[in-house]
Amino acid sequence: MDATTDAGPHEDGVHTMGAAVRAADGRMFAGVNLYHFTGGPCAELVALGAARAAGATQITHIVAVGNHGRGPVGPCGRDRQVLFDYHRDVRVILPTPVGVRSVQIADLMPLATGWSFDGGSVMA
Image 1 (tube, helix red, strand yellow):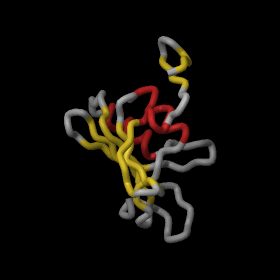
Image 2 (cartoon, rainbow, N blue to C red):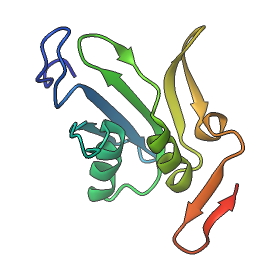
Image 3 (cartoon, rainbow, N blue to C red):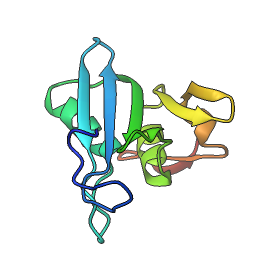
Image 4 (cartoon, one colour):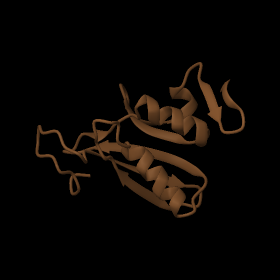
């Protein structure tokens, strides 16, 4: 991520987060965020889009990292919901009080409401 960031230390920038996803077939796909005041896409969503564009339909793992060596960062609420809705079995790599861990997306979504094109919003 540090090679592609456009922000100096202690600066805001357009590209400050990177993400990688692993497909069930072992392929890896990366993405970077595109900050915009209207709510540009997070790095996780860009990586998911890159995976799908390459034909990957099953995602097993995802991780996001911040620029300037910030390391793993947990997904925001919107990303958690998208992951929960489209990749219910994905494992998320994120920091915890006891170090970096891999958890199921459902563990990050207590009392979640899922969504699908066919069924709309339903309690998961």
